Image (cartoon, rainbow, N blue to C red; front, side, top):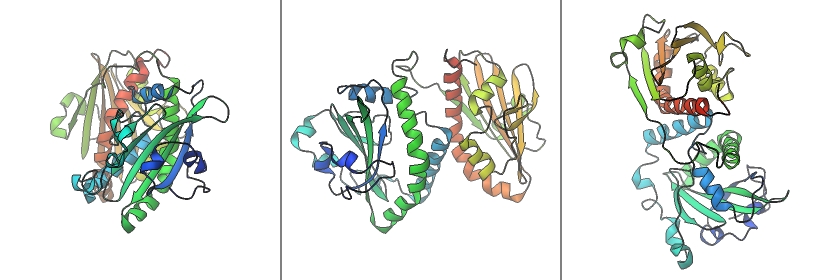
Length: 370
């Protein structure tokens, strides 16, 4: 690992990682250190690294990434499938050997550990004060290292480092392309999420259980007429419908606000305004949800509307009989709509179940009850 005096994308010097007596240095010396981030863990002691890992892997932990992060990862996996970046022959044990093959005997005998909430990364080893995970694609072999270190302000903190070995010129270009997104969006959001996981450890509802099952349907022929009738669009070019069961009690408008917020977030502005060109209202208003106009509502449903110069959209949220659903309806008003939305729809369908699960978790949380 080179460049000890350089600053990483995370704002910490490389020495914040390289100066620590971690075992990763023995086995990843030919990897380049890309980022080092420190996560605040108030009240943490020298022996609390296992507790931090448990908090990270608890339901509602780092897997509940913000919408923009989920969107970027969904785009990444979609591109990977399109260009063959993530085929088995490009992964661990095929294109590259696992770092487990380099482990000294004592580390090989140590518990391997879990994925620490970073699926699809695979664990290399796990100790009482550090762990390492790895992932390989056609472009790069990546190591995620988590280490427990004394904090400058007292106590202990989690340090997260990313080490990479690019695969030739294509790997270097790939790393250069994703660097702004990784350093400006993904890692800051992930850091906040992991800090929250530490702060929320032990809260009721975070331990155990499993993610709620979300039912889905795509296409006008697969959507019940009772749902299609709630849209204002006479011609529907695209529709999908996602439903989750929940015991939480809230109105359709409250569910919509739990999913999307009162005003558009950075992620929503990026997707809705930046990519789809939707004209959204600014500021908080009882007549809008995340910039979408509340067009009509019934006893158990609400319809939000927005449009751009090339498409018109409806979001329909329905809450009835212990089930909450989100329907997305689009009409292509210009030919561009036929080109822009189909590839984005695949990403949208990956994100929508998470929106429903997150809203159910928020609405069912006694501290966040609407």
